[in-house]
Image (cartoon, rainbow, N blue to C red; front, side, top):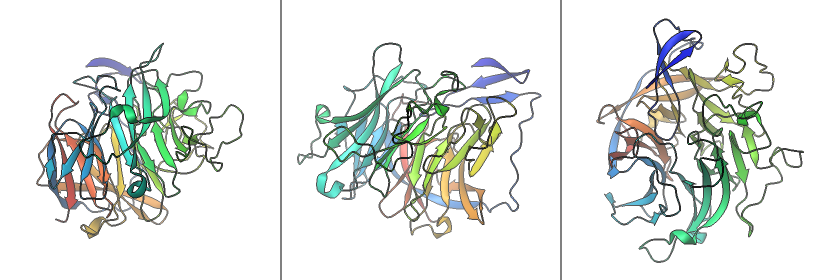
Length: 412
């Protein structure tokens, strides 16, 4: 805990967040700006959750290989398997020998993402996002690697992986960490701005610097003998001093994104700095503002920022409601009709929300989960092949204990 000064007001800041970074400011005289109110507040939705598995060490992401199993990434480095409702002792893959050792308490690095190749049934390939040691002035590097499911169900050799992409990070936070395939068959990757506070990297910050991969969502083609190819339709291909992998830019920490099964749209939760959390629909070549803006508000500069070229979020909320947005999924399942076509997401502090389209705007409502322990941290979501949505939780601020759980959202 430390004291900060913002807008000449003395505040207390505390940060204890797994997998993302934000600061919660409590000020005796500072009044948070209010976002524009919805014309009509959407109703509260109450649903149940069904426990799927527990005793996990900070679960960060899920994959569904199609045989009824669930693969779960644990932040310290193991991919665990839930088979017939039971968490197996033997991991599918143990990457700890390839990774850095995560801190037991506050920690944002680790095994953060997993996804299956679109042709997984035939080629058995899957991809992981993890943090590893590096050299020089950097804190660590993030690695995207490809593995192939072996015919031997006892596990996979961690040295059998093919490194697809590596990215050095100057600080230990704002990793991003999400990997997903779009319906176009290309792999999308999220990287945070490199860490620290306020994206103080260079003259304009990494988020606005198109010459590097930080603060971006990338799109690459992994179906090649080289580590990866650049799709010719990427927005910045052939432009001087611009990284051609970039699909969209101007992010602080797009920790979780997902594709709507119905529309193909890409939704991302971008973790804010001191005041605002945002949800974006990510489109080709767009600039989402950071560090010029935080949500719809000027950040650097504090006033008078040029927003002409910035794509604004579809929703935002202030730190009077939460501290770190956890991106979720558009619900496309059948078990909970009331959530149909709504974007379900959360804040790390345990609050759950939804967005519903109303004409050209998105309205934000609240969701209450029944039969779930209080005061859980929400650190991720998952979606199975039928469109049902799962929630990943932890009772701790970091991966120090095996107190993580998986819940499935079911009808009330």
